[in-house]
Image (cartoon, rainbow, N blue to C red; front, side, top):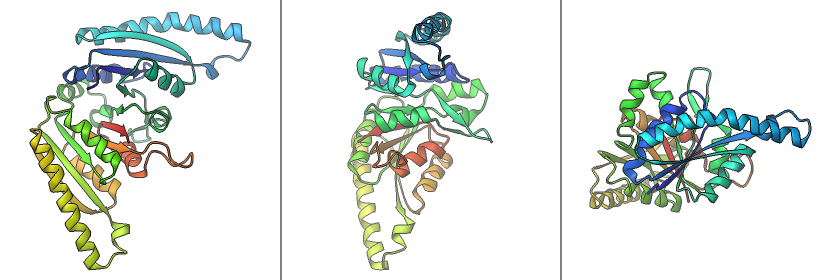
Length: 295
């Protein structure tokens, strides 16, 4: 499923814990992890090109030691490792290397911390999802366990234990479902299939029309449930009316979900429209690891 994973890292806090967790993707057939660090060219002193290149070479020497440490974690898991240090704009280099290496997954190792310690999607991850085509795994373990490495390690023994699959019946959501099916032999105990009827849209409907929509959604949920059960999964369904973002984040928390699998349209019509408002907001505000699959 994810034979080759690209793991960009800035060697920030928690990056090694996240890498240990990603190494458990071996259960999904991972054979190689490509470690990537991008030296952000614009942050180097702007003197002249030759000086910048010499400084980048000096940084590479320092960074190689950190790369070796990270590589040891991957090798200890029995997975091949490749190390790359590039110079450029981080998200562009990540996307370029992902294409060059034919990566089947990008594990986005960088997150942004909020004032209260919440873990949010960083701008680089945001751009990777928006401009790329490779599925992106967004880890949120620090948001759940804080600085407790033992709790994080326990979670990572089975990061696919309980999957939340939200669907809006779109082609993007259907593609995400195809990925859910591939987790069958990865220790999944339950898949929760959820659909939220947007309360703003439903408020405008007459009761008869609302009941019709609800009946159709129940039938569709039953169809997806039967489809996954045929694949060998234990499945539960959830149908509610409300704010999709809030409802889905609430389900993820109350059901102790270990992974949310989302479909995304990717690039919006304008710079500020980021890969579908519901998918973007769930990935942003939930503290659960998220797999974003492009439609």
